Image 1 (cartoon, rainbow, N blue to C red):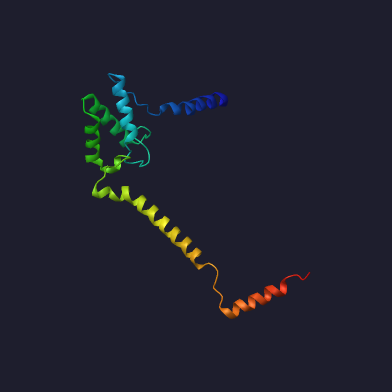
Image 2 (cartoon, rainbow, N blue to C red):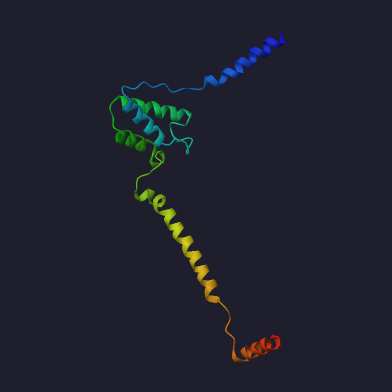
Length: 155
């Protein structure tokens, strides 16, 4: 009896993996399917943040995929679908936000940081090189010459 119960429970647990949702969309053409795949790959899930709509199983991602599918069926262009989602969720939903005053930091910030790091490194290297060897005054120069002469081996 316990063996049968173990087998039934094992089978149920094993089959739970098949309970995950599978998106089944039917398209009128392969081009439409390619557009859908492209859009869901280039749009970000608002909840998961670093996952595309295509890779996310979050409820909001499923809703956005459904909405994208409906808009494709209605004949909307990719630009219209993107602008609808940007109007609703902001520039965050795209992996490539447009260049606007609000997103200027995203586009210029990394370059400014790179320039600042290079400037600091260049300045520190120049400072080390400019220090060089100390200049000896005449008394120190004479003492150095005596020390070097005393150290030379006599043949």
